[in-house]
Length: 125
Image (tube, rainbow, N blue to C red; front, side, top):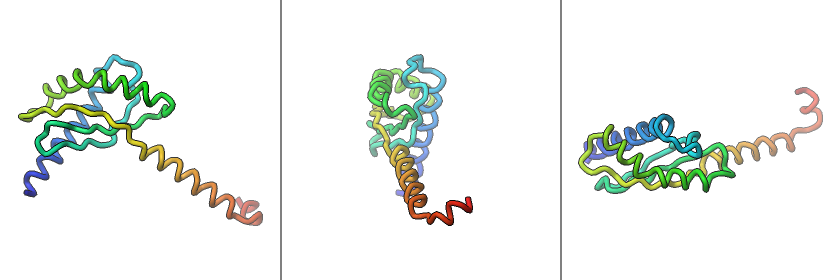
């Protein structure tokens, strides 16, 4: 079983790396140029892959996701040229809110620290 796990994790990492490069260099759709692939989850039979992504422009997330979905057959075909596996997974793009949530939490922590600081500590800064 450990051998199988390492193979699937290698395939996941290769898919992640290749998709990031394909999106950055090969896609002509300007909506998806600044997408970051955060993770890939693949089914045990390699038939489906969830591709988690994040974007800097969260207000355009739906538009960007639509661009990725429209590009999925092209990306899958190009992935097939770069990765040698028996079954090439169908790509399913899923927005990953963890980066956005992390930034929000960091901001809240900073605000809490500032509000807890006494006036004397503020003057020392």
